[in-house]
Image (tube, rainbow over all chains, first blue to last red; front, top):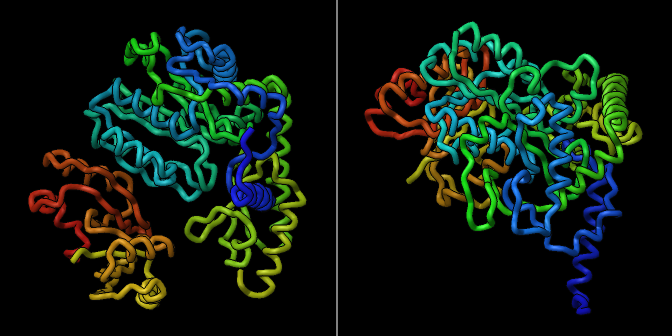
Length: 376
Length: 132
């Protein structure tokens, strides 16, 4: 075995220490650190590649497609996808799933117009530009949810163009949920004959299925495709996610790729085969009951954060069913210590599984101190 | 010389803050003009190192816009943005992106990325911030 030079080894050691240190104050981003995949590390010695369509046979047999299909079936079940009538794959993250959903929508409705709210993730604008789809940004309500009057008026004005609705099932900053039944009723009331709804459920796609009384947002509500992140609530050291879509729509854009002897409609072609096994492992280990407990514990931490912040005189709030707690932007001294996401005059923490009550309490004390000094 | 435009909700001291950011980065301001448009403050400037100036201002959290975008202001009401896009589409103008920059007290400031031809600008002349 060849070893690294001392300087290079020192840099690696410093990197490990740095990452471990930064992780301790990681509160504002929707990525869980609550996972342990060490039993799977043996797999990292192989050039696994789930090239192309996970449902098609491949000549590249060093793959984990069986596990990937099981993962997709599980996500199909929790999002009420019609059995045997959906398709999907494990992506590199939520944004790739959104790109796929928009791509599918554009292929089905080449003359379509995309409607998305002000609070939509920045990557969607990038995707729209890549795909060259006309789009209209819709105003947001104060809680981050789409303004339905603006949506209705906008569709009415462009009613000759099939609407492609990009719905947020949990916006980035405030975890607001666009109301899919309301969107559907707008389309119905305007007698729109052709439309498409894609849901960006990066975070909430793994919380809402486990919350009693959560709004109807998935295939049961009539959507066409959805994207969920795997590295968010489930947790993964490598970003990943899933995209699911109605199979009839996907079949319309399938292309035969002779090169690997497979049918491929995925965005990337070569796809890593390790994250499907991470997801499979987490799903098998936790089960639906385990995730339900995990989500409830995140909600409990969010409730605790709001009451703890209130005790410190900090006005914090959250949307119904949200694990994101929004509060006024703290001063720089707090931002220097904690990794908290800031937008304008607001900030948030996301009560992911690794965020403990103790961490929330420590942040609350820092906010209280800043407030006492008059910097908040 | 290419211009940079900064848009914020109405506020005092914007010029001082912009000048400080650029000064700290060692960038010389060559021209600077400030004005208030309804509920918004705007600064338009040219600097000796355009790309560095743009990056420094964005790093400092400003909405710093290049000449590639057209700024318009609208009433903040349902369908307002859709009516603008309708005008442009009917005029055969391709809009690359539309971004709501700020909304304040019934007014919205919007950045359009589109063809800047005379024909395109004429279609939205009544909304252009530069005509305010």
